[in-house]
Amino acid sequence: METVIILVFVFGYLAITLEHNLKIDKLIPALVMMAISWALISLGIDDFTQWFDSGKHALMDNFGLLQHEEKLHLMEETLLHHLGKTAEILVFLLGAMTIVEIIDYFDGFSTIKNAVKFNSRKKLLWMFSILAFLLSAIIDNLTATIVLISILQKIVKNRDIRIWYAGLIIIAANAGGAWSPIGDVTTTMLWIGNKVSSGKLFLYLFIPSLLCMVVPTFIASLLPPFKGDLELQKADNKVRSKFSSTMLFLGLGAIVFVPVFKVVTHLPPYVGMMFSLGVVAIFAEVYSNSKFAITEVVSEEHSAGANHSPVHYSLSKIELPSILFFLGILMAVAALESLGILFGFANSLQETMPMLGTEFHHEGVSDLVVLLLGVGSAVIDNVPLVAASLGMFSEPLDNELWHFIAYSAGTGGSMLIIGSAAGVVAMGMEKIDFFWYLKKISWLAFVGFIAGAAAFMVTRSIF
Image (cartoon, rainbow, N blue to C red; front, side, top):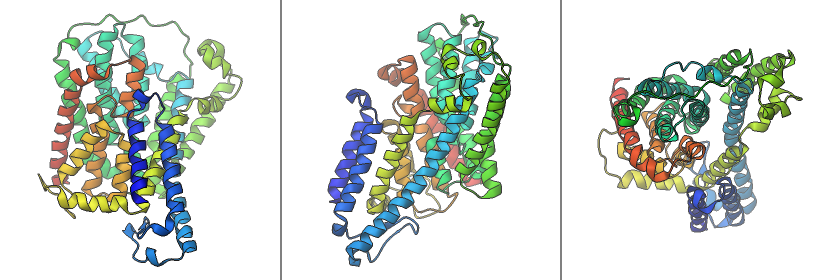
């Protein structure tokens, strides 16, 4: 039965990886894979000889001796435990997405667009790279990429030049997401799972992530596409909301406040995110009720939503398919974890993998294993990879292993355009060709990834 469940996971995983070829949204195989895996566990519960206790992070000794009803009860408890942990991540993401949509409702991101007063290609590259690096640390790398490419489309006319900028935005956004607990789904998972703390994450990963962004941007600035000046598009004459800048800084500030809330109250991060959403929502309601000529300020699409609250409008705009995908994939990985499959795989990996490079100061997970995880995240989705590593390794809070995993899984995805959510959304927005990215951008991402990894090995020996 275990073999069948592993095969279900492998085929589901393949369907997720090949979503563009199959023309099937990745949330569908994720949900089907999750449901079938748990159904098979329930039907074959008496055939399993081992069970993984997620609370104690160890295999149960006496699982085979338990009665059928006791096994079923244990399975239901385990399922509820994993659903609770997954729900923490999903509710957190829902809150963050809604705040970003509220900022967009008030046209807050136009503040960034209006800051571009120069036409030097090199200056523009550095500006977008630094913005992507900083913004992704606050509003996550996927949203930062959407925002910046939307701004880029309004500034740069020539698509052939624009896709070069988009490529560097992907690298910078993924690098920026790695050092912040709210910057990338995988980092958020490690943070919510009590594997990393926000202070140590910054301490260990800020410099490696910065190098991962600076090195490719510097090399790119010497390439022909970024030499000379650009012809900028004329600014549109759309009337901006007088609250746009206020909502931008309020929204970003509210998201940044979440780690502070967690440190002060010791409550799970989603509680802080719901508090931040509530505060932002109050201001949004007050501002929208002050009758600031909403039909002039916003587009026709906004006008359709102008009859009800900005919060309702923003909730209707959030990306639910991503939320359902995370639900499916995290619960499917939980099924493999519960049967002890991931735990067994981790042990065999540590025994067979050569101990290359500097070893960690614990049970001996090779640096090579974590680097390969980073390269793997370029080929397959980094969310299940990190979810699997949470089930595989039992190192304590703020162990270097978790920080290296956060870096590798977060930045390694830049090496292929399909390797990260930021890359996939950029691919869709600018119709970037997979092989164009592979030829022009992948090597830059790889150089940045290695530079950051080398810097991490130095920083961990200092702190």
